[in-house]
Amino acid sequence: MDINTLFSIQEQLNDRIIEEHQLTGQDLFQEKLLAFIVEVGELANETRCFKYWSRKPSSERTVILEEYVDGLHFALTLGLSLGYKNVSVKEEFDLKEKLTDHFLQVLHLAQQLNVNQLEEQFQPFMDSFFALGHKLGFTYVEMEEAYLEKNKVNHERQDNGY
Image 1: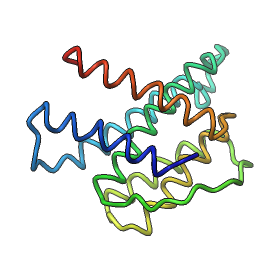
Image 2 (image 1 turned 90 degrees about the horizontal axis):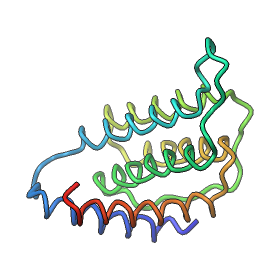
Image 3 (image 1 turned 45 degrees about the vertical axis):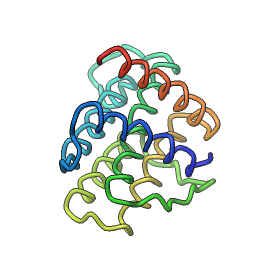
Image 4 (image 1 turned 30 degrees about the vertical axis):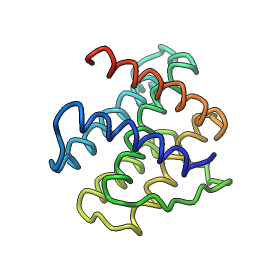
């Protein structure tokens, strides 16, 4: 995964949104963080990993991947907001935990970014989010391709007054 390219692409979309919605100079970190948390919640809902009371299966893999990359858009956005783009991409993760535990870890680390917006907390946040993607069965190639496709959709939405 070329994380530097993804940050650059995300920055272009973010800059466009800021300009077109006349948000220059506004501190939108809280909104961006909440957007990330909501997207992770939507992703969890599609996996149904926490719905111990239900027999209904998870959504199709393509739906789950799309929800995951929605979260990736906001994870990158959080890094850009904090000025943290120097992220390494691990190749191996400990995936022994339950899926629910992975979701909770991502959300915990997102909350930690809210409390202490420190660069040394951003890398573990991204590691946790990428580990979640791998736990869901996605490769970096799949994540990147789906991200690029969704980014096009996001630009089209802006073109159409979303």
